[in-house]
Length: 103
Image (cartoon, rainbow, N blue to C red; front, side):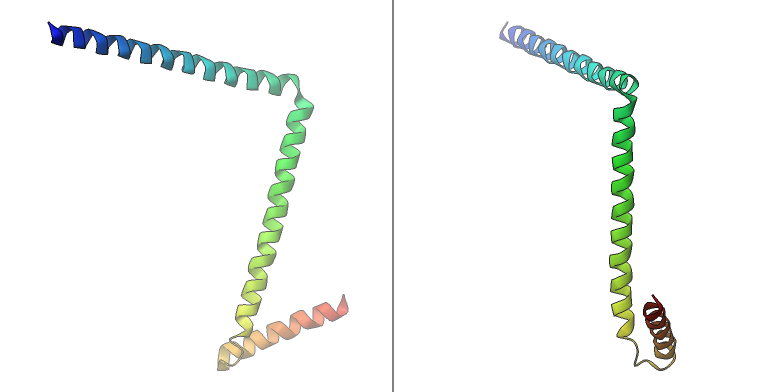
């Protein structure tokens, strides 16, 4: 008899958990629906957010590229003493310095 009571209690707990999960699922669907409606009713806000996101991506890409190129440039100057590779790097550095002086 105790086992039956225990099984019934566990079944009640499972039903409660299922009910909570159903409420959470409905809440998440409502949020998604509200987000879609907001995007269609406020297109200026959507455009502004996408513009700022694109601006941030572009700025991050530019800064990241500059950092990587500066690191590679400083790394390449360490190889100037290598016979064949050093000559090529020296010419490259001279080209960059000439270009800087023109600007």
